[in-house]
Image (cartoon, rainbow, N blue to C red; front, top):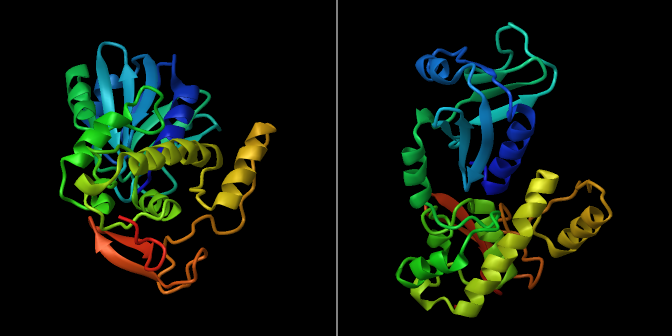
Amino acid sequence: MPEGHTLYALARDLHAAFAGTAPLVTSPQGRFTDGAALVSGRRLLGVTSRGKHLFLEFEGDTWVHVHLGLIGTFTVDHGGWTAEAPVVGQVRMRLATDQHVADLRGPTVCAVVTAEEVAAVLARLGPDPLRADSDPDVAWRRITRSNRSIAELLMDQSVLAGVGNVYRCEVLFRHRLSPATEGRRVRPTSWGLVWDDLVRLLPLGVATGRIVTVEEQVLEVEAALGRGEVPRLEERTSAVYKRDGQPCPRCGARIRTRLVAGRNLFWCGGCQRRR
């Protein structure tokens, strides 16, 4: 499933391409025909994201809510619209102007909603580390009231919006935290380190299109961005994710895996003992 940095970058690209225009909205697949007719030709005011949710605001207090789910994609092309049939897959929703075309495929959610319904979705979500107006104390209060493990809580979008399995595995490893630690036993300083690290790492994902968590590469990316360059990453950019059975790059102990909150968690059995 795409993590929050992917949706944030997608919202940025869609906003740049379509904000201020009145795109033709269609459903080549046919499953969003009625919804497309409601917004087609209306001026698109803006596109925003919160966690893994995407919101397209049209004039007339009308929104399109999108959640990509596990297999959804939303591509933004720059060749201008043609009346040709989609080349790849079935397109649920197509936005088109003379300058741009965007195709949504395979989403879990694609629905026309009101501002009140958007507010209800946002109210269910925890703070998003990519948003400057997010309050980490909201997540902290939910964590301290829970007996669930921190590994489960980091994947709960009502606790923290936008963090998925890769960031979960990697940020716990970076701070040597045992994934089995109950939320109510997590120390405030530990939570502060995790939050600050997510605030640091997710924008790098937006800038590069990849999840970068190995510290040497993090520093390289930050330096390149500081020079106004777009860094190229060819090597693996994770320390423990999908490295089951391999030696830990920090202590040499075996990396382990277990199903937690529906996804395979990866952690070091040696240096991630701190609770």
